[in-house]
Length: 155
Length: 465
Image 1 (cartoon, rainbow over the protein chains, first blue to last red):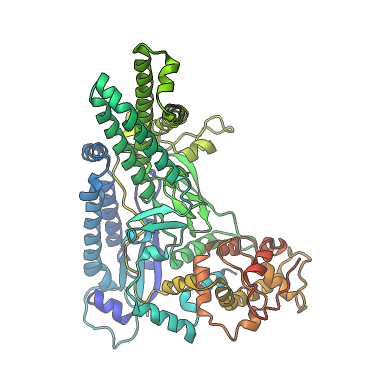
Image 2: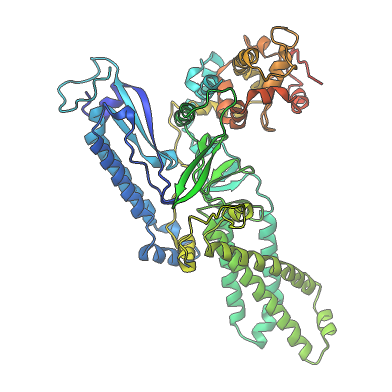
């Protein structure tokens, strides 16, 4: 069992990686498939996983939303010969920061205790959500007594 | 073969010999490298990774030169006359347009067009596994396309052998830059970069503003000549009075107006229908093609919405982390080390990989039924030929391993053999394609190999021809 991310990284060895691919059914907007991969079946509850992916999809939809604010940003940028991008952070970048924080929080609270780690999609070219599955290296490395997780017994 | 392929692209599988360990040690002692320094595409970076340009920058200096020279001539010779006779706003408008054009051009050239980073080895392995499980266990790899539904329209995703991933829709691989670019429009030599999702709006504003600028200058020059000729002198005299600048200015403007106005019109049509040049040229969504009625699944069916989305949509971030630092335990720095080394040295370092891959190739050769008569397995005489042909690279940038690699093996470090393979994705792509095809075609690059390995001692090289 892993208490936190540090323990996960130091005392566990990487067993496998699962890649959640993009869902292109609605076009080129960023959206990930919510299909639950079979490798995670013993590790994490389906609902938790789906919640994470759906929240991420919502964040990306918010970043790529075309509406009043994005048009304003675009027109302002055009009027200033796009120099405004040098000083101002775009809305997309702001949402990406929120996403990074959310993923960090999810890792700490939900995934690390189960021996899993989510990699931010931006580090993989927004193509996949990479979930690393860790195996505990030995009894000495892990601390016991962590709660609730039924799944991390695949040793 | 596929197992070998992933061993090839997985640097952890190879042992590190003392010489390359020394190289790595040197690298670690230096300051941490940024990711742009080991970027696998054919790009050039400036300002420590802030600016990106294609390695084939084409005629960008010419474009800048033409714009600057024409505007310079305009401001020097026409403006004083027109200010006197017309209005002071002429140079003001000209100046504003000129600044806009230059900024748009620089933004288009130096912005990342939407390059997709190549798949990590783990991701590539996962995709390969998925392709395998979906059916084919034959020797020839199955056609690598995936069909998906976008807005009830069937779209085929192609597998990119260089980047080792299924290309997202509207993404295309630019052979000049050796990168997959999202919403790939075209590679513009005038701008020296690909035009893709992230810099299409800059490109569009560049050509629109350039159209206005050239039309404006053309109009002003015509006005200038007309006014001069109205001052009592004939047209011919008016032209003679001015030095040779008029023909130059007029000629440049005249020819560029037609081409640029045409290009602007074409791109306005593309923007309004949410198409890319690539799709338009290929006729991907043309309803005239075949019996199927294929419509553009990306259009919003409204000109204004299409324009707004393409030009004023949210600015996506750059997916290649140019200025990020490489993690210290990343084996990629060895790739840069091998880049700096002389080609003959690197060719010798390919020795281990050469033997590794050719062993597998030989195995397949024995079992394969479509193997041509070229190689009869088991005879040592033909083995060098197999080694030669099988290690045929398609790249001009990297030399292929020599025949004498087995002799060289003991002497040369093996670790740097891996990075060229992790970077020579085209070579991997050849491995992914039917090896029988590879073996069957004698390599035209063998002569090049001879040249490159000319100073390698005792190669025992046996060219096929």
